[in-house]
Image (tube, rainbow over all chains, first blue to last red; front, top):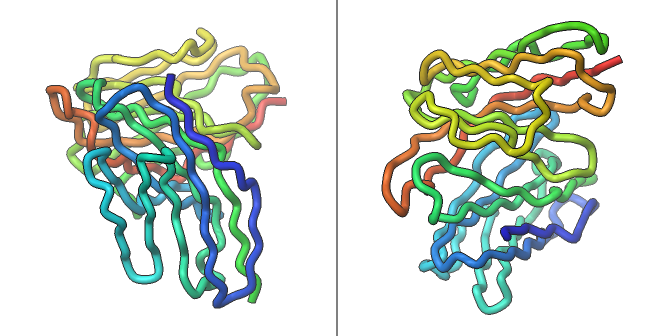
Length: 117
Length: 118
């Protein structure tokens, strides 16, 4: 069965500090997709990144970077030089490609990040 | 603006009421989803519609009844709910493809409908 674990429930950092959000997943599929979403106070989940299981290259997008390691089943997310606008709940999610058609995402419980000015 | 619009944003209802949540997507997607978000729990997938056909019903109680009249609209009809059904209900859409690697696209979410059952 699929499972996504975000062990950090809440994190607080001071502005300009770096912060890493952890994500550990479980799946029996060899082909799968991992996602990170951001949920600001307004409620909608904003897509940040998708990685497929065959691509372990780390990715950097501005102040955001992602570290995908299949050996430890982890897909961690780092924000560099955090800003107050980064305050939100961040969700890691897994989709198994064995399902055809629609995307069934399984989400972790989320990590609430608070950036203190 | 994600292209997915949910109404109403807030809803308070009694346990004997009947109400509906509406979702509309303007992205040309062919798959739509209902998720339930309760405090301190993972987002729970409730229903999936792929090309207007329901492909997933995740053991959801019958007091929740989905309807997908076309690929742009999705409803969640509510009746005789319980207080524990109070949650944020999120609608999402995606572009689904057929084949083994069909489920690759990201989901686009609406802002949710905050439901309170008294």
